Image 1 (cartoon, rainbow, N blue to C red):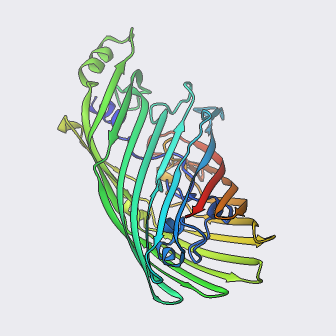
Image 2 (tube, one colour):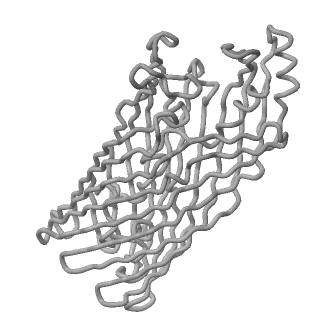
Image 3 (cartoon, rainbow, N blue to C red):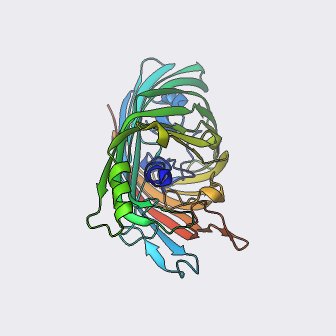
Length: 424
């Protein structure tokens, strides 16, 4: 019976479809999104505070740049035969709105600083009521908030070095149905549901960066350190269904599924970014960025409960992963600019970890955008298609999901970004 209580709590922080490999989000500026996020080697606006903080030393005056990205994801699950008979299940419609808010100021010809608020790790997915994997996850939402003050200094007219601090807070919510298993191989009895919510303690990380800006050539490097967010006061609220038909199962549900506190932590990976920009003509420029994520920090989740007998370690075994981002812009005039981008995003998730909580896959993303400057103001609009394709948990006829919940997942997302900037 111990297994039933453990299963209803153990998966609180494992994730769900996000919008970059794992559960990383990288779309925090209308211009950057239009160029596929390939902006680490050029300081186009104050969003350089996120993409490469060293760029703030090249921005004149005092600037604000901010906006949001409307993310509309969809996901489907086709259950493997013979258990699920290839039945198709879909997620509910949802909209997510991560923000990118930036303020920068130039103190002297060489010294610049700023602060940003972003949500670089987050996820959310809600399956329909009849989804057969509702015992693993029915609804999940993870949000991170990075408050990042940075300072940058030009050691030469063309080279800037930057350092920053990441102050990180997170929140998580998970809803799932609860099953009790009375014997090995039992299909289980659906006895209730649980809602688990938690807010993290404040954690801190840092960034180091460098940028070279020439007339035609730009180079950028950035390192963002990993962060461990601890969730010490999570609450698990249980609801037991009425009129359970098996008396001994009902008794166990009432005795075991008691509201209680739980704690754990989640590791956000360290990130390394290298970018090269080249202005091919006075109006046309391209950038190539390589990103490496240290996702191997997400190897286990240790859960500690008020009832020590329920403590559990879950193996995730993520591997380090990388992305390639290519962006381009063409300036039709001094005011109007067109952008486009492409991303190949390699998943860090092994097949054994693919589940309704996080059915991740290698992704191909395509973007385009437009920007318009009018005096000291700027407006950037962009669209991105995130295509994760299909990924099955069945490999060579063998199901790989540890819970035996096997099938094929497919997901994609439409992203609409809008940002507004002003130079004071």
